[in-house]
Each structure stands twice: as structure tokens, then as C-alpha cells.
Image (cartoon, rainbow, N blue to C red; front, side, top):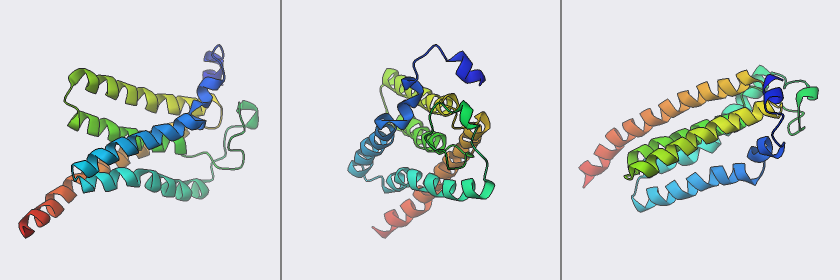
Length: 180
């Protein structure tokens, strides 16, 4: 209620953006851009890790939500009835966004050479991650802890992805280079 009260002066289409085509674009865009880059540069491990994020987060949500069975906020708080029959914890939108765009930040930091562009893209990615989380609370379909839980779980996944990428490149990369 606090967030809805503080943001009530803004039009309601703003928090609905992540449920529109924009959310799909914000998933497809980094997958397409980095997918092309990874294929061109033969970065197969990075490609597999990045492309597995939507699938892994979907599967985790399919396990967590029905296991914990946390109810959504009361229908009176929901500006929209987007997900009236599903459970709340963790926020799927927030989890996918933190995982995918967290990895985007990692790759931008790693591959972007233009400092101003790098900083601008990283700020944009961080703002997108925050916006998606706030929008879920704003429209009343998630509690703040649903989003916070998604961010914590997403941070854990990002750490695991980084570990997998580093270990894979170390061991699989050495195996491939030793075969030549």
C-alpha cells in the first residue's frame, strides 16, 4: 500500500510495462545480441549459460511456488488481476530479470570497451532490474519480500553461473586446447 500511495500520481500504464511486450523485448533483446556475439566469437559456454537462464528460472519457480504456496497480496491491493490463481513467492518477473540482466551487466563489463557506453548500459540494466521489481509491488501482485527473495535467489544464481563459466572454461577449455 505504501508504494501504491507514493506512486499514485503516476499513470497506471507505467507499472504495467513489464507485463506488456516490453518485458518480452527485454528478454529477447539481450539473448539475441549476446547470442550473436557469442556465436561469432565461439564463446559456447557463455552462450549455453545465458540461454539457460529463462529455462532454469522457470523451472525453479515451478518448484518453489507450489512448494511454499505463499498467497499473493489481497485482491483489493491488486491494480490488475494478472495472476489471480497463482502463488506469490518468488516473483518470476524479478527472478528472470535479475538473472538475465545481471549476466548482461557481467558481459557488458567484460566485453564493452567504450567506457561511457559501458557505464550507460550498466546503469540502464540496474534501473531495469529495479523497475521490474518495484512494478510487481506497485501493481499489487507481489509483496516486497517476494521481490527481495527473487533478488537474493537471482544473485545466488548469477554467482553459480559465474562459477560454472569459469570452471567450464578452465577445464573444458584446457581439454579442447590439449586435443589440438
